[in-house]
Length: 470
Image (cartoon, rainbow, N blue to C red; front, side, top):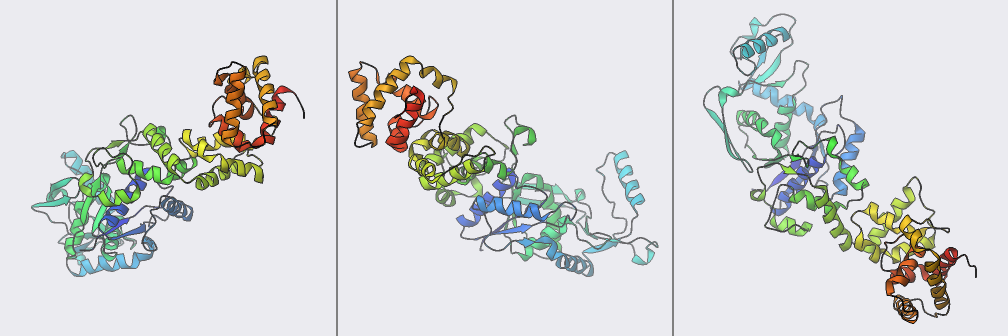
């Protein structure tokens, strides 16, 4: 059997981080088994579905590298097919028209509650002749659910789960206005798309039993269901706005790399030994449903940040520079980035990325390379630029003016020689220099900073602090 999975979001908003993990698990399962991964946009809720949400979801999936193997299927476009199958079930005697009024349905629910039962339709039109139908009531079509015995779903994550069939009511598959219900449409679409494995959140587990009724009534193969636990917040509660970002777009804006986010989501509910860093090719090799846990996972922003820092350190410098330059240029207080500033940031990326955990932080750390005089200094830097600090800087400036080469090794040797001559610890020379060049007490290695800024710019910044002009 060739494996086919699908991710089927409803376009009512952003791509939720939990949905992104579901898409990832479907993508990896299909790739691991050499199968296909499909997308379906479940846009039948016309009031809430928007083209903007469709675009946001597809953009988020593409950013994560989880675009479908084929163009997405739009559920609304399949509505005639859903209606056709409902009428086919009716003709086969597997479904029937129900003429209950809203008042009668409410009376059924009230009676069930009074008797301590779950409110559900009582099947009153299951075997009645349509000739008894009251005037003025447009019927719905209901599936005939089994009334005796049990239904078992062998779930790829939850194991074997059984419910008594008396808990399954004759659910509506076609509304009175002729539109199919979500529960029915999903089954028809999954069948027509050849889906073999339905991997989704465990909040859909109860739906599997009701959807199995339609599969069996049509004599279709029931797919393998696999219901994965939901993601909870750090406090153990369902992930919500109070925990922070929910949409994939927000994580991109905060400066996370897509490979870091998918690596983190993979490890959020699936495990393979102690491997925390899991590149995509390794994940494809190892991923299967057996490693998915049954308990909800807690989102840990600190772990995500640490993992993102790892991927930043591993990333190509030009790629990081492009991300940083785009971020700096788009900020409300964006910098004027001329070619010289851009070249400095590119040249300094190796040192910059060593200590950054997000692209946002990386961009902030890179600002000093593009900053114009006069620099702004933080409080710690200002303390280093006192009279003693400026005296050190004046001495270093004279040394620098005499250098013919300003490569990293050359400036390091010059600073070390100066410190020795002045009987200073290296830090007593390096820290005022760092403050003068960057406006901060933290930066990439100071000798790298000097080489990246170059002789002329380094001297301009030192002279600006010392109040001298050359």
